[in-house]
Length: 208
Picture 1 (cartoon, rainbow, N blue to C red):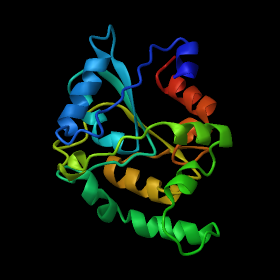
Picture 2: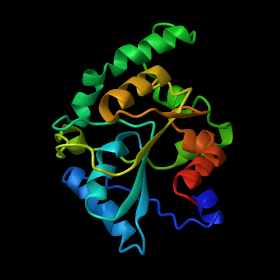
Picture 3: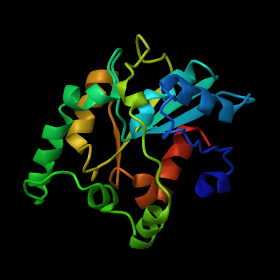
């Protein structure tokens, strides 16, 4: 956010009601739309990971010039976020990648594998922050759109993402959106590990 605003972008970070069991994807979209307000020109929606389930709903509520997905969970109509993992083969791809990069046969470690490329001081600060317990509600709700919205869409992925390996992301994005991915350095949290490069790409994609 500081990098985007320093470059002159009118950027807004939205905190979703993740711990509210009554909040579904429509609620998330309403929260984002309220944060956007009434823009003077179409906005660029940036959605990371599961945010890909919400951004297309927002695009139906506010004028949108582009959707930018970062390491996304790209949904299919009628598919819930809970179903997405098995439907895409995420687990098999992740475990195969662990073996390929020398981590052996082990499960996902939330701290190590999310923060493996994040500077230690940034990781420590992030882990000190109070964390909301993510409600299951938006994971259980089928994605309600019939198709991806007719809005220009770009996909930025981290080549070192351990949760969603690069080849996996390429395949899912191609199958579900018919798009190629824009590969950059960093893991799943490349907004923390590569903030300057991600901000630069977002500014280019927004035409700033």
